[in-house]
Structures are given as C-alpha cells and as structure tokens.
Image (cartoon, rainbow over all chains, first blue to last red; front, side, top):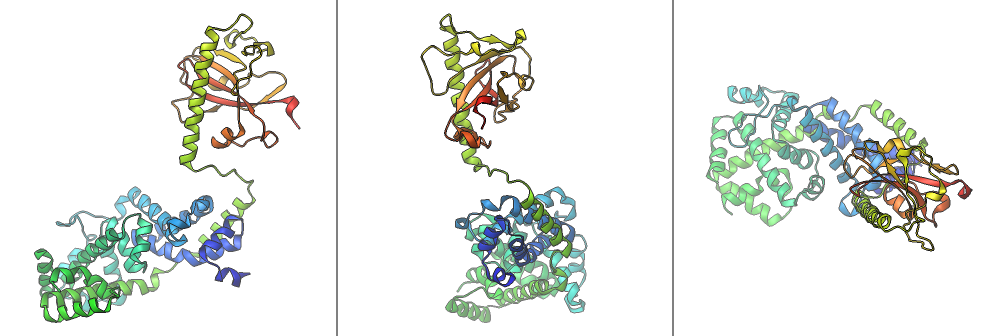
Length: 210
Length: 246
C-alpha cells in the first residue's frame, strides 16, 4: 500500500486524503513538507515560524483541501500558495523579527551587522567557513523586501519554474521574472561589496547606467 | 548583444536557466568582450554559488518529526468527527443569501399590503400581549395558496430582541432557535417587527449553508422569519409539524 501511495500523484493523494485516508495524508505530507518548511524558513529566517507555517498549511489542507482546483495549478502550487499566505501573515504580525529599513535605492537593507561586515572586510568570503557563507547569503536574502524574497525563495532556492512561482504568487510570469532579476541585482550588489572595491565599482556602475 | 540585454539574462545564465543555446552563446561571447558584463556575470556566479550553498546546507532541513505526529493525530480526529455539510462556495452562498433576503423583503411588503386590505376574517396576533399564538391566527386569504405563504404574523414588542422570541411556537410544532441573518445589519437592533410564517424550498436552506431535513427534501420547509418594521428580514427559525415526523 505504502509503495502504491509513493507512486501516486499529488492529486491522487489529496483525493484519497479527503476521503479519509490517513496514509495518503502522511504520504503527501512526507513528499511536500520539506519544501513548505524550507520556503517558510527562508521567508522568515525562523525555525519556529517555519514550523508553525508548515503546521498551518497542512491543517488548512485538511480543512479546505476540497477547494483545490487543478485548473489553477498543481497541488504543490496550492500548498506553497497557502504557505506564502501564512508566512506573510505571520511576518506582518511579527514585523520586528526581520528589520528592513535603510537601503537608499530600493528600501532594502541587510540586517544590522551584515552591512558592517560587507563594508569592513575587503574579502570576507575568503576567510569564511561554508556555514558562515551560507549565513551571510541567508541574511542578505532576509533583508530583501518580501516580494523579492519570495521569488528568490521559490525560484532560486526552491527551484520552481517561473510559471509555478507565478501560480503560487498569483501574478504574471513576467512579474516573477522581473522581480527575480531585481532581487538578484540587489544580492549581487551586496556580494560585490564583499568581493572588494574593484568588483564593487564596475557592476554598480553598469547598473547605474541603466 | 547589448549590455542591457545581457543584464536581463545574466541571472538566468549563471543559474543555468537559459535554455536557448544560441542566446546563451551570444551572452557568453558578449561577456568575453565586455569587461563590465564579465564582472557582472562573475558576480552573478558568486551569488549563485552562495545560493547553492544555502540550498545544500544541512541545517536547512525539514519540519521536526513531532509535527508529523501532531498533524496525523489532527487528521485522525477530523476523520472521526461527524461529517459537516460542505458549504457552497462563498460567491454562490452570498448570491443565494441575497436572493433569499430579497424574497423575504418582498414577502414582508406583500404582507404589509395584505394586512392593510385584509378581510375581517384575517387576524394578526400581537405577541406583546403575552398570549400564546393559536392556529386561528393564520393570515391567509380564504381559498388561496401562495407559493411562499405567510401563515402567521406576530408583532414583536419594541426593543425586544429577535432571540428572545425563539420559544414561541405552537404546541404541535418543533422549532429551532432563531438564526440571525448576519449578512444584514445587527439582527437584534430593531425597534419592533413581525414574525412571519413562510414555507421555503429545501434548496433555500442548503443555499444558506443549513442542513435540509432529509425527510422533507421534496416538500417545502416551514420557517418563522423575523421581519423588522422597515421590512428587513432579521432572523429565521425552522418549524416542523409533529405530525410530519417520521
């Protein structure tokens, strides 16, 4: 039975789950909880919020799963759509968790400490361990505005296609593409600053020329 | 390729999302000839490496195991719980509620007109007098059977809340509590009003998200509707004749 379920599509698992099949629910949870959890974690930077969001997503699936419409997207998109809603709602409630305040051009800032490191160190990556590099990138992503952060979390980190991300966010594909492009520009600027003055000046100049 | 064009695809190029081979070749050729774009591509690749490190990071893990146990328990509880009727989509429900409200308002207006021109044998009962309603208080012109038929009209005393009249019923009837029609204004904020006995098709109950009596699916369901003096339906309760029970 477990083997059969593992081969079933998400839609089939959802159908069985809504008919009361607990094993189908577990199979669907096992398959999709990781992505939902990581998306929430990358959006919030908090394991606690990520856990709460994952919980809320699957509770909502139990309660409102019959509202899923395959014509509007996949089960994955449906789950991430709920996760996005829950995460943004939670972030707005706990706005103090991520501080976004001082970028001149985009209203974008790094959490306090990141900018200081970027400015103070000529090449901080050189001395960073892998985990520190990860932490630096994670903080830079957390400093992005939510509408940029979510496309990075979905496309660059979640490996969703632009079409899937558009389905999750509920916007045109072109909007996803342009937001991701802009988000990457902001991140590149941060990392260019890390790489040193030479690298820092030219990409910024190229961007300024646009 | 121009620098502006390159900048638009630099992210996709470094992330391996640029699937069009010719476009990719042109972009790489441009980067080899333009130092600014070469630096941009290098910076994008650095970013991509950082993102990949984040994706592969062990600490990025999954939801804790206890969450799965908690959710499975919640699922099992939900499955064991008695089935709840699935409500209609909100859009349809709102539409049905509006139609129901409109029908009730029309009914109230019709009743008001009827009461003004009522023949001597039609009576209405004032609840405020404290007397229990009697079967003879039916407002029904002789020899007429309208589809939605007002059978009883009871005047509600001033300032009396809709909920307080929930117990008024005939001896041979079973009634529900009054259900406020909450899509309107405050159901209890009324100076005075009327209780109208109407008959509704079961589909109207279903449209309002209420369970229709299983034994009356093909017949009309009796209901008492509280209508304020301004003609707005405020609350409704459902009535079952004891003789109709099976």
